Length: 501
Image (cartoon, rainbow, N blue to C red):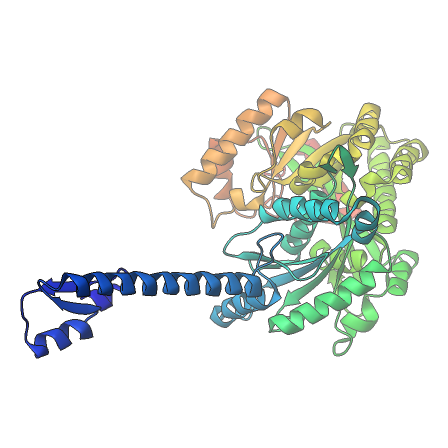
């Protein structure tokens, strides 16, 4: 039936005499008019009338569509405005029955836009926003929505996160997005931004509350420094959010020896011996108990102590590695994760160099870990990386293989090893596709002269994919949990008489 088809094309019956019932029935089912055969003048009139009506309908639809776009979409970027964004997020949250599943809001404030507008004109500011929008759009999908909610404000809603580490990795991607300058009319603009982060359901179970809390975090972040992110902390309720994670508590943690480094061996799967060790930060809080890096990092970042804690961690790791070196374990490398924030700070680079001189640790025994997302914007600190690399310091890329980083970046950076993203080798996700990816990464790494290390190996079954892919190095609780320096010394002693396998 014509009405059921739902098309707007005029349909006119031009036929011999029909009964009134049949005419009424035809019109009921979508026929626009009936003209008795031979009435050419009336047929011409009906056709002209229906074409005019069709044009009116199309004009109305176009106007409604334009009004809809003006109401719900940003004219400059094409992204949803706040109202449509909130509707979509609300729909996602209503379908998310598992309250234990995380999601996060990233409220982004672009810095310096008023100065650019006043100096170079609004058209340059608009082009800058458009280029930034294009860069951000690469992270959008059905699980990650993006909106422009103000002149220089954008917001991501990402429900494709499993833990705090995933949330921080996504924030790092956004940060590195602006590390490459934006070129407009032969002018280079280095954009700064601040990010306020709120987490579902901890910081709210509605998008309005999550946005409000992200705004509070963003406001606090803007008064600290450029290119920073800040997590929202509840102002009421649990002790841990108000009293435990404060700047003073973190500073006292260093003084009171509440911070410590634990050590996890990196195993050579061919020999069962040690390839090296990773230093992992813990905070033994008197009230909250032991806190892992995933729990610690947001609050270290929150309180602006990321560089200070990083320096403390580096010093302790170098001192410990030097101690083992003097005991005869002179080939043992020590790896530790360093915040990428530090690598655009020349004084931090000098601190690393001075610490190696102070402790006497050979530079080639120190390996600094950077996340894969770092590769996407490493140009901003290439000179600093090379300066350290020239001294012998080693670099590894952690969680490699799922972030889509360009392979050519590995050729330009002084990288020595790749640490596979645990998802590629987890027992739960082990499959032919993952095996193919790990095999390809391992083959590529060999050609580039890089080592490949599998992370988070917890059960023997995971070793199968490593052996099949000819992956030579691994670490995880299957071999040893992170242990104290004293207990790690026992592992080193075991190496003299046996292996850890």
